[in-house]
Length: 227
Ligand SMILES: Nc1ncnc2c1ncn2[C@@H]1O[C@H](COP(=O)(O)OP(=O)(O)OP(=O)(O)O)[C@@H](O)[C@H]1O
Ligand SMILES: [Mg+2]
Image (cartoon, rainbow, N blue to C red; front, side, top):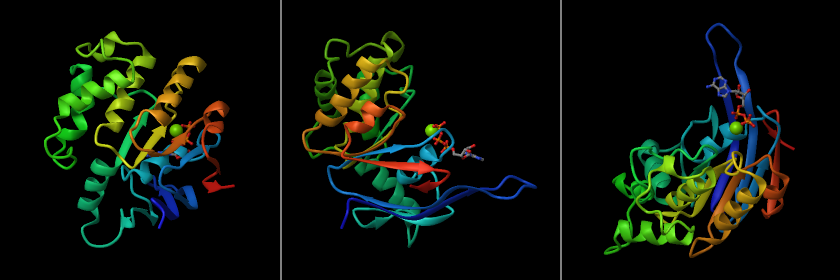
């Protein structure tokens, strides 16, 4: 069994009075534990739509996603299962960081433990782990800064620490280096692949050839199909 199984995903948008637009047209692939997969394709190809479905943030029109063999969208209790899987097994990193501006960076990193679903092993304190992760990404001296006081690359380091907080099995990253210069982006990728204690799988949408080259495999989306 693969870590992530993506089965015949179709996604259509229906706008009132118009024919349905098919954005994903039968996408299937699998990701093994610890594997790094890049998803490339031109703007509008459906990359973000696919990533959001992989993370259970959006629903496909047809098809299903299984994480550790557990289906996201079919079967009894799918909605609750999806929330739990997302909280416990998936970390997200976005192009524009999505940090909460009024929380300092330690609190931002601790956020995933506050959902009530994801936790840390008994006795491990969220604040301690958050500080450890921030030290690993080079921000140990900045713990009580607000996101606005950090550079883009530093904010993305915080987002990376947040994504790793609950020791996910897979990171889903949408253009994680898209707002950064090449050097800073390279540092973020290095951290993304190396900072976790155990190998963590990753599906990364990227326009950067260097980023794709660091992955084990590249999937190309063209008008909703893998080519
Ligand atoms: N809520 C929506 N309603 C209608 N169409 C949508 C909606 N969301 C996305 N689309 C359409 O789906 C297509 C794929 O969008 P998506 O954001 O997945 O592309 P992308 O490959 O991530 O592009 P980019 O590289 O620019 O980020 C686009 O044509 C977009 O206009
Ligand atoms: Mg996109």
